[in-house]
Image (tube, rainbow, N blue to C red; front, side):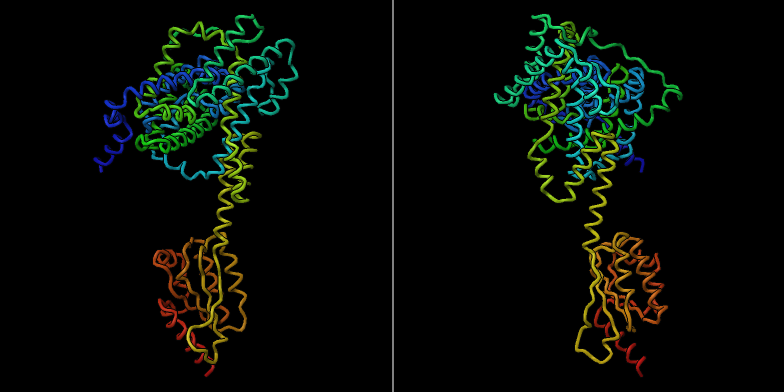
Length: 546
């Protein structure tokens, strides 16, 4: 037992096998790391600004969390850092509680994710239905786009915590000519990024767009907001106030951040494993790595981290095969922080807003939306409901409500597969057969379908014997077994003899525990063969008629 425990712990830690094949792939890994680092730089700065934590916080997260998650995570090619989904959750928290709460939220969320990995909860993400994931993604994309409206227009953010309302409120504070110049820079960024996509999918269009927009702003002295001064390098790690008075009010928000970090990271790692043959991923270890990444980022002033699907995809398509690529991406960003902080400080915020607006639009695949909406009515409802709740209420509530809706439709569909069918007795018809009813229970008999069975069989009249065929019953829960027990008891109380035929072996123990067998008038009323049950039923009728 102790050996198994040590082996389980060892499976959550880095190992030499993580770098198997590095001797052959190191050149490709280095090139992929540089490529994804170039792509990640403007996104890290933009997500930091959009969250309210500041551009430096986004850059620190990409560096620290990117390296830590690469080393300790469960995927060989996952790239981690600040993401749009995290910004959507984090921005309202910082707006309400102030930037001083960032480190504590980051540390608490990291501990929650780390604990989830240690408790082996990594595979639970597999229970999230596809329409919920796509609706969630659509809602996040809409929020990210709307969150950029104040920055893209050079206006003051609205007071509302709802992205739609806040975007409308911000437009009321627009001033000319700042509005015009900001929109001009956004237009330049969008045009360059879209043009770069047509040239080549791997072309770093976002970086080129940022450079061009910055040169225009600086060269013409445009009156637009910029990132401002950044620290050169990483700050010294510091511990925030960890007193109960500080942590307890932040436990709820941190739990929401942790839930999102776990879901997004596991989804990203799962997608990465399908893009190329880079080895399997360990979901539990991935949670451990992401938890440690958020803890480390919080100590240096960063944000909670998650696996980034877009950057991970760039990493894989650029040729990454081992963790060296993600580590290289973090080191490249560190070099930028060390030697290029003064240059980065001149980047216009409107240019970063343009990058995120294009990124948000690219998160939505019209073909995927059409596929979900055309699949089934239930999936379309779940998709739309999740997206609407994501935008109007909250991301975590959206996932929960989406899961509840999907579960409701799944149970309804499962209940429809259940059936109660009356059959004829086997063999030649003999006098008295009209006093015998044979019912075949099939499919699923659970709490969602049990009542229908009770009504159908319980409505019998002028019957002396009922035979319940259960051999084709695939699903039986405690509610279903209790309904059968009550049904047998009710019929026996009315003087109707009940015979049970063919309880499947997997349901026999449950039927015995709940009382199905005990409710029979005699233990000989349980049969394995329908012919034997029919003969016994006919003998009952014959004796009653004699």
